[in-house]
Length: 98
Image 1 (tube, rainbow, N blue to C red):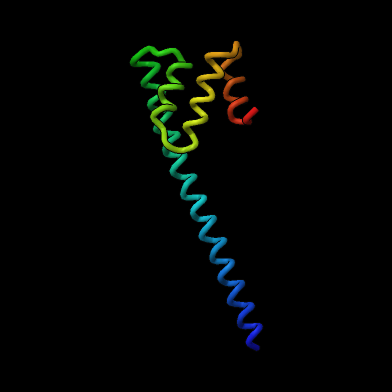
Image 2 (image 1 turned 180 degrees about the horizontal axis):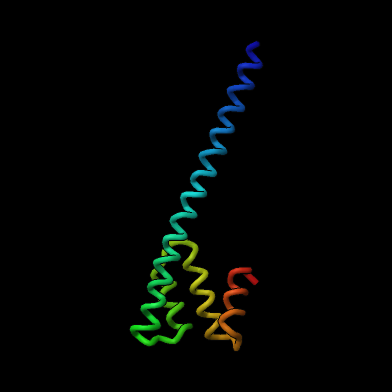
């Protein structure tokens, strides 16, 4: 009887831990999506108001970010600046991490 009770307790505790870990992951995802929205608005401002070239605007916008979205913008800017490929190809490469 004691082993069944102990087993049930372990299962409940593990399920709770998994639930909290998943909740934290989803919470960080919401933060990243919000930062991505803010970054896109900032990118539009860089391009429209300051007439900054896209590669430079991506690098400047990426420099202001805090989450992993930062690397997305910085890599896209560097790749666009250094390689002779289209913007579609740059985003595809950066998102697929090639």
